[in-house]
Length: 337
Image (cartoon, rainbow, N blue to C red):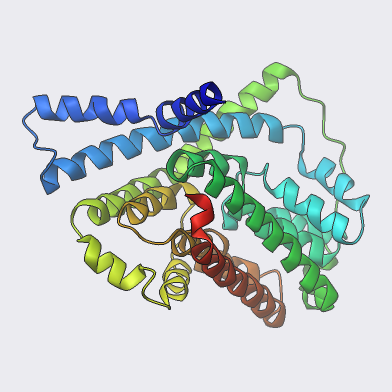
């Protein structure tokens, strides 16, 4: 058991967290005259290390996820979802969302396609909640910072929120609040051609290039904000605002996160810096969920497909769920030590 634990710690620290890279960058900066104990030196080290680490992990993970996703084109996904009913369909839709490495705005066109295909509104919303919130990439990246327990717990509660959210929307009879042009849109059901392994590899490479290009500046900005938090803002100030002693920290983090727009990869460095400052894990996860699942641009796009009442119900269910999840994580943070 001790050997397994040592292997796992090596995998988490040196493969996922790439601590060797941080040491290497620190040595290079020191040789160039930077004092890593000072704010400027520490900020430069944080920025370079996190940027390189995130883009390496991002490229590898998106390649793997996209290769898997090549087996689930929209047409096949519609057919799979169409074979299930009730909560089983919601669970499957949430799980399928984990193999679609999309931000909230990128998920909406698929949501529209599923709706026009006649899938129940609750099922499509389970997918819409899960897709930006939980994916295989976020699992690995969260493991590199917070460890396996928190990463797995995040994925589980994200899936639960997606299933519950979609089920509630279905039970509330929200079908009639999908815009009529979506429901009446003709859905051409074409059989997707079977791809060869070489074509799947090419597709995965293209997805890596497109994703990196799309999230590049979000990651850079996120790392920049993380470097400022990590090296320039005293821990006392952060903890007074977002610490466990502030009973409104989870609410505040969620409210701050919602107007922002970034992929989960852009929120990772900010979360890492907040974690290092002693902010509760529930508060951090609420911020990340608010950014990825309820960003303002995605709400504007979703309004084109659904009527105001359904948009309000979706926003309310997800935001309340995020806040509840945040407080639960903070209350039971001792389980993740």
